[in-house]
Length: 199
Image (cartoon, rainbow, N blue to C red; front, side):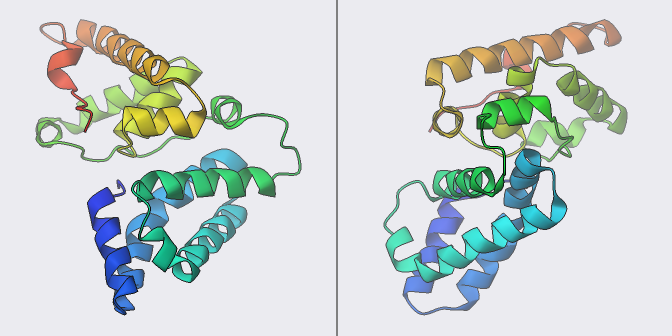
């Protein structure tokens, strides 16, 4: 499940207007992706739940201010990252190192009409191909493909340049295509199968 930027902004606006149900809708919309992201950092279900609850409590407490933020989705992921790293007793490694050292199998989610045509077997092969990616490629691919973040957002989140993120995404798509191509009648063209327009 991906965090919908526009929908989150609308819920925050509704919260400012006094609609308390909007907070409940926001909570249930973002909880699972934020929980998975926190879990990928700290490896503790209880701690991940606590971290997400703390961040979302602050969202309620500060919703009037947050309604003015242009990139609420990025704000939420950065808040989870910072809270998770502060939670850790050993904070010597940066976020990217933590994700690379402890890969998490994030379930595939439908991100576009083309995935409706993928068979279960093909989805399984894609997931295996993703797990075989170099650590940095895998992290970037999953944040963009699984979580729906933009290249710029991933760059800010991981402390990388946008060009690095774009290059790593290109490497990831090429390696996935190379992994799947021998198992198909014809090679897969990454640019035809996966497109990530920058808004």
